[in-house]
Amino acid sequence: MASSKTQDRSNLILPLAIVAALIPLIGAAWWYLERGPRQTVPPALTPEAKAYVKFLQLANVEMRATANYTGATIIEITGQITNAGDRTLRQVALNCVFYDVSGLVVLRERTPIVKSLLKPGETQNFRLPFEGLSENWNRAMPQLVIAHILFE
Image (cartoon, rainbow, N blue to C red; front, side):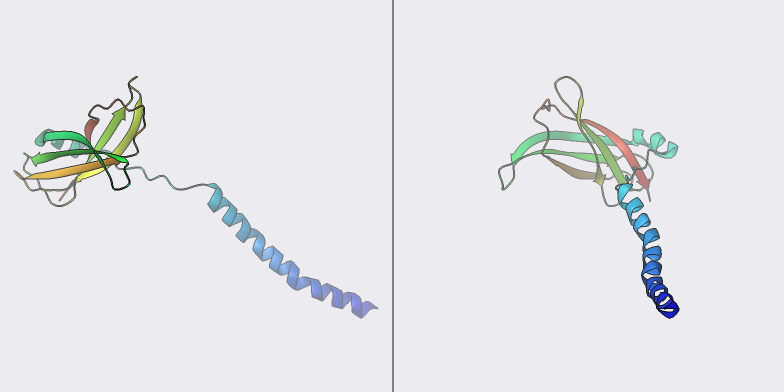
């Protein structure tokens, strides 16, 4: 009878070891899933970029509504950016802020307008499509603010 108790205990060791090994793994998985997706914070304008903003000129900025192939309305902002400074730029991004009739923000989106090198004195065209804007949007040109500059 003593050997059957010893055998019963040895039969329990493996399942207990598996459960003990799984507990930390389950805890780690739960922690990872519960913390949610990571929010990536876009970089702010550096002091160097803030000083350079005065050399960037937006021109011929226009807004129009078009329909895509499904019939949904796309708001499209087009324009040009000129680098009137003496540095080559690798990237420039704008914050586009749309408001409702009460002046409340309906959409704030950061979007790049310079995606390839913009040398001193050069001008590049840009096109910014926005789909699915709130019905409460005031139909006015959004506020366009330079939000990021990456130098070459």
